[in-house]
Length: 146
Image (cartoon, rainbow, N blue to C red; front, side, top):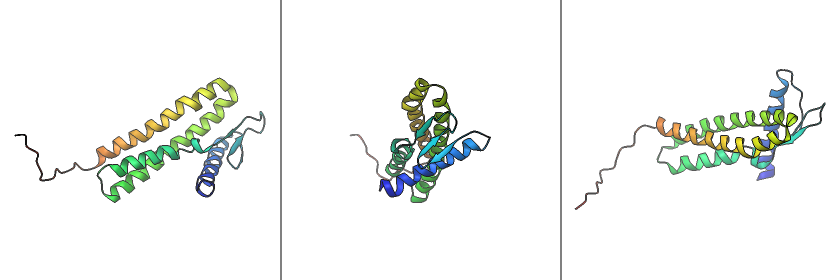
């Protein structure tokens, strides 16, 4: 599945990130899943774990476990996909620029800061989605203590 779904998705993520870097006049060359600066040679390769898909899968699983209708879940999945993938593009672009100036800051941002921020993004979407849902009605069953 990875070669047919995830790899093309990551290649699209690289293309989009490269296009957004070039939009205001930045320099970036994109080849498959690699974004490279043409002058200084710095490059990043977007790997499977950097796609944002894991955070989305966790969000989708949480929404599946929560009592909601299918249309409500679909709306939550759509909003979650937009939120997580948008932030992930910001992640890729920021790492592209950070890495050109400091390997230590790149490693810290890549391994710690952005992983946490992407997961927090998914949690925030989940909690906002729960707040958006109409209040649940209790079933007629009441458990009484004797």
